[in-house]
Image (spheres, rainbow, N blue to C red):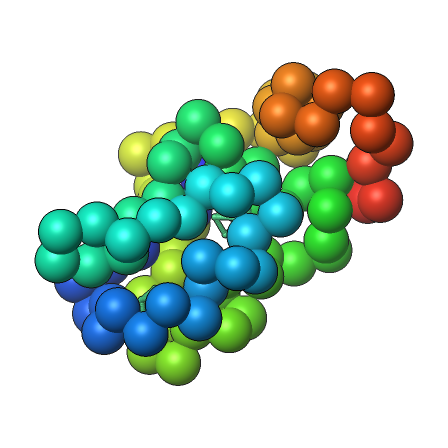
Length: 88
Ligand code: SF4
Ligand code: SF4
């Protein structure tokens, strides 16, 4: 499932450069994740980078966007045409 940023976000910006899919951006009040670009880091890392670097645990799986690993990998391939996934 895609990750989502909760209201706990303090807009520190630490997560934005960590995302391998450039899915994170600064919103009007808090940072936001584009769910159509989030692969839970499947294809790039073994764990979710945004969740790892967030100092307030504001990056969490979105229970309303449950997706299987194959779908997440397909998304990664669409976002990175011609590249080979580092993690499958
Ligand atoms: S889980 Fe990974 S792909 Fe998704 S927003 Fe966080 S850093 Fe980006
Ligand atoms: S790392 Fe956490 S607190 Fe910082 S901008 Fe990202 S979601 Fe917000």
